[in-house]
Image (tube, rainbow, N blue to C red; front, side, top):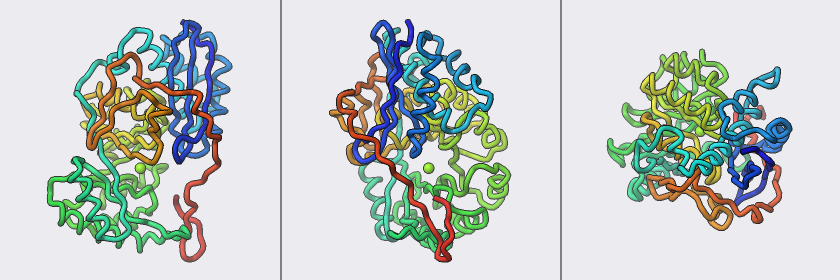
Length: 378
Ligand SMILES: [Mg+2]
């Protein structure tokens, strides 16, 4: 079996871009992958085009060797753009190998360890009452775990951390009081705080309010997380931006994260994700995968989740049109609190290529500013 073509589709599906990759083989078997670098997708497309130059003619069965060749073939190895491209290719290769052998991808990874994949949802509110109501809505709809997000910035993109953290802490304290001890409640700060601000936020929460706080600060400096770790006992959830096992290294080895927010479309596909999963297992850390993309990401992450023991919840969010069944006529079954993968060969994904025709749109994440005019973290 030889790779005969690699196609890239940076296109709009629903309300946002998806960066999809299709790998075809001479014998007609093909596989789909998705890149996880949200924004700057055309840079990933360029990286895939570079890899295409030496991947044509390769045997997809040798996906481990191909991963090494993609990662180590340039002098300046690694980085988020390159591993987002590697991820999409590696996922598509696993889809091909599963189809070739006639088995679901989870069988390639060790076989089923669970019947379905638990998920968590995210609810947003603009004030304390809305946050509390959103928590009750998610709990009553069947989610055992969810993130409750307070509106952090205004319509003109003004963000003041001290204002946001005080209001958010008030809302979360009220939500826990209303919901009782059973729901798993977390929050994603999207790394908008400094160490001091994150510590103040955690200290304004009553004990046992949060089960996890996700990315309170940026992750370039593990030493900063080590300092924050001393200031709060709330579990941390970190890792959605990590582009290799080496970026996970200090966070796992030094106990800096308690949930691994691995993104299979960023970290390097199945080949790298399974290594991180095993490494996290050795430290009794569960994977809580990042999953904001389309149904190919849902399918890939779910197959991985089926085959590993150390797993908590898969992120799920159904933005309008993202999982459009006309574009993706075969995809995992999504219900409140769970995802079920299809027991068909490969990922169980089908894509109507003729519908991948909405042109890519340039879009920017919010560029936030403070009241003094300075730029601050997205
Ligand atoms: Mg996040």
